[in-house]
Length: 73
Image (tube, rainbow, N blue to C red; front, side):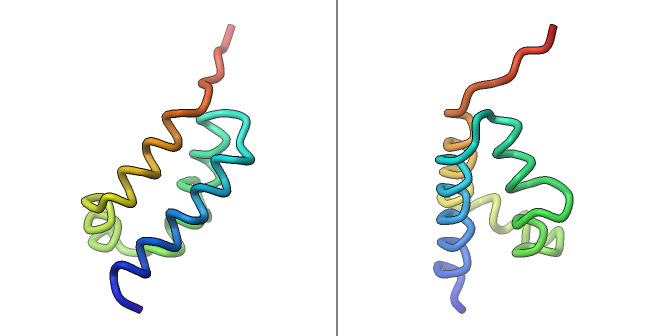
């Protein structure tokens, strides 16, 4: 699997999570949380750092940021 394909798959998954999530935190936990897809697809620090430089990663962050933030009283 080339890098382009490897980066498209987490973006596709994040797009699905963003559609289903009710909040920033819900999507964050579903995608980036402990045991979630991000760590499974990019298990090493080096892989995560490399992916974080990609346009796909920036789009995932944009999707997450577009969701409502929960307010705590």
